[in-house]
Amino acid sequence: MIRNEISISLDLEAGGTLDAAKIVFHTSHPSWDGKMRVVWICHALTANSDPCDWWPQMVGEGRPIDTASGFIVCVNVPGSSYGSVSPSCVNPGTGRLWLLDFPMITVRDMVSAMIAVRKHLGICHVDLLIGSSIGGFQALEWSVTEPDIFSRCCFIATAPRVSPYLSATVEAQRMALEADPTFRQARSLEGGAAGLRCARAQALISYRCFEGYGLTQREEDEDTLFAGRAASYERYQGEKLLRRGFDAYCYYSLCNSLDSHNLGRGRGGVKAALGRIKAYCSVVSIDTDSLFPPSEGRLWAADIPSSEYYEISSRFGHDGFLLETAKLTAILMR
Image (cartoon, rainbow, N blue to C red; front, side, top):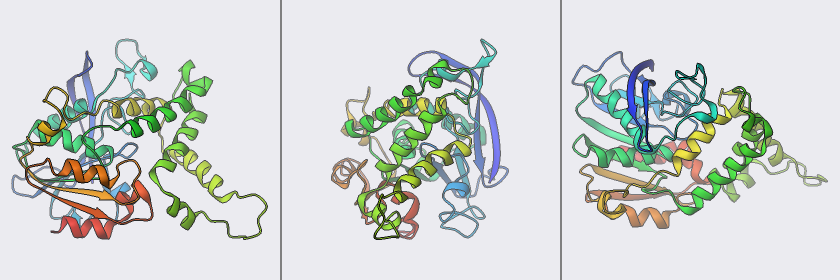
């Protein structure tokens, strides 16, 4: 995948404008030739715009989403640590890092950035739009904003509106960041590092499930005095996110963005908004996903005029969207 960037003026739904805002995106080819099949991927919370990096079994040369034969696009959302305008960038008005002064970004703002990239690339039609988890928030929003652009959409482990349960898990993560005194001091990107480790560990529990932890983090010694394997795994995952270059301020910004997701805002409600989608849609739930349970997915999928609902089984909860590649491939190939 090839890294690209453009500069745009981004009018924000919550008010204000980000002038000369950098938007980073990856494409599978230097440019679109007007003929190649276009597949647009929307990334999840802490992923980046190179899906070959975080979805390697699905995206790449010879993979189900073939970077050799198709024009694959993924945009790094505003607020992320991985290149696009975010709290880790310099505020042109002050000459200092934005950090906690970064404006509130909504899911609709993220989609506005994607539309700017689409127009920059000269793409007027997308054959397949895919979004999983928070990427699904973006994909749903975009499929309603520009319904004539898409032939097919695949919404995986997601929902048309943030739920109270998801909002509560996100608030617990924000509280972890705020409990780190260096976070509020906002002196550098190293601020809130301990809080970020804790927030990531909390998030991971909601991404997995009882069975998955029992499968991968069970104690090897049946006579161990104190269980420690799962605890060590949680600490490792918190540290891993920091090593990947993520910072607490971008994480905080993205958590705030999640709470903005409401497909029905200003459109007469969620049901009416879903009724505007013109693409053929595949809605995929995961049976062990506590963040986006199948009982909810079945309901809203039925409100899309042309849709098919799928439920896949996984031992890994919400993270099944990253791990159950064979099952997802079977759905995408239909």
